[in-house]
Image (cartoon, rainbow, N blue to C red; front, side, top):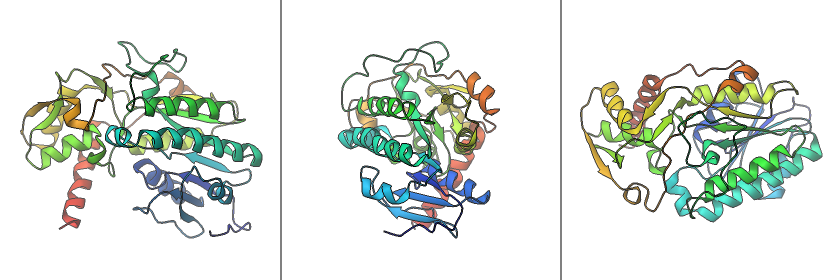
Length: 322
């Protein structure tokens, strides 16, 4: 394990740094002159700038975290099992990473006076409703059957751990997408974009009436960094998302329009799409008034930019694999 150089400015630790959001956060911090320490279970696209470091390890390992949590510094906790397909395959790990890993991090942050920002998910709201979802809304008593329920239950328990930690903050992310997001985990936009680029009908579950609001990864990262550095009086739990609303059927049509390829759609079951029972959520739209007031932030990039960036990224990946 590499030792930290105490003569350098206090670094920012990012867990799950090789994920789509983690990589973007790391690059933005480095561009701002910050030193970044990254932790993930595998190598990836991000390599640290001078003065930073990357460690392969697990947030469930206290000895690993003990080397990395900075005294009086900042911790962005993104480590998670991501995507419905992965949650169904790794439900026990999903809960352990959220609960056990967060508890270890929170304990170390408390001991060292470090500020902890945890990325939760709109999944904690459950099935959603026909109205805007606000941070003050009561959360569901149950998230349905396992293994699908592993993800929201783990995130909800982790939220409680972080909010009971002095200075701990929680950002509930609503549907983040953009370059670096893989279709293999079941995420809808890279799945649609890849299918369209390959000339295949877009897989649509049921009638396609479920509604979501998407945000570009750059917007999500900007909001998280503002939240991380906001003054002590800021609200400690915030929705972070975009305001554009799309049903899945309308989303499929718009992806084809943006990419200029009419390939149609095909109806599939959740089991066919994700490899197991996945439940459903009809309507998930965030109330973003607290985010806008507390952070002065609004998502700037719409669906057009997200789709274009995904298409460019997937095209580069396809060419590099040849």
